[in-house]
Length: 249
Image 1 (cartoon, rainbow, N blue to C red):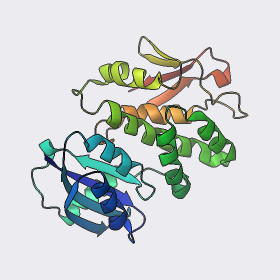
Image 2: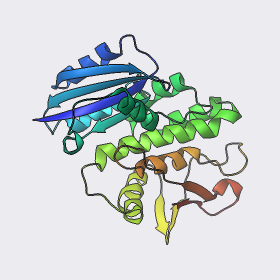
Image 3: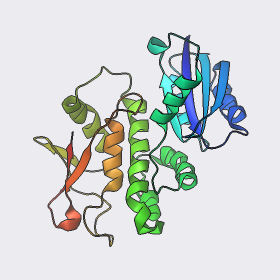
Image 4: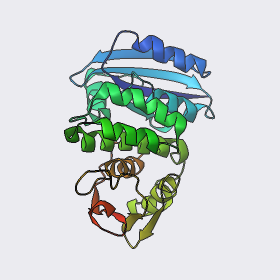
C-alpha cells in the first residue's frame, strides 16, 4: 500500500471534492485527507489517498481526464515527505500545472479530452472535426494545448515508471514509439519526421501540425508535465516539404 498526493486545478469549486472523491473510492483507494484552496489560477484541490501501486496509473488517468480537471499533478511516494500543505506551496503548484490556455476554450477542451482518452489511438477524426469548427485564431493554441495534454497522458500511462532519460534518449525511446501509435514517424539525425500528418492540405496556410507539436512537448515534459521543451515545426508538407519535420530542444 502507498500514500500518494494528487493536486488538481479546476475552475469550479462546487461538487469538485464529491466528484473526485467518489472517483478515488470507486478505484479502490481511501481518501485520507483533502484541502481546497482558491488561487488566482483557479481552485486547487489537494487529496492524499492510500491504495495499491498497481491501481495508481489507471486512477491518475481518470483524474487527469476528468471534465472538471484543468490541470493535474501526482506526487509519488518518494517525494511525499511532508503532508503539510501551505497556501504558498499550493499556489506555486497551481501556477505549474495551470494550462497556458491563451485563446483556448477550456470547457470545450475538457469535454473532449475524456473522449480522446477512450478512443486513443483512433483520435484524428475527432481532432480534425474540432479543427474545422475552430475559428482560425484559436486553432494553433487549442490544438497545441490538447496535444500537450494527450502527450503527457500517454507518457504517464506508458512511460512514467521507467528510468529518467536525457532529452535525446527520451525522443528516441519515448516520443518516437508513442507517436508511431498514431502516425508514420522516424528520426533523421536530430530531426523528428512525420510523413502522414493528417493536418495538412486542409485550407490552412503555412506549418499546421499544431497538435503534433503539442503532443511531442507533452511526451517530453517530464513526470509532472512542467519541464519546458521547445518543439518547432521546421518543415511541413503543407508548404511543399517531403515530410513534416520537428526540431526539439
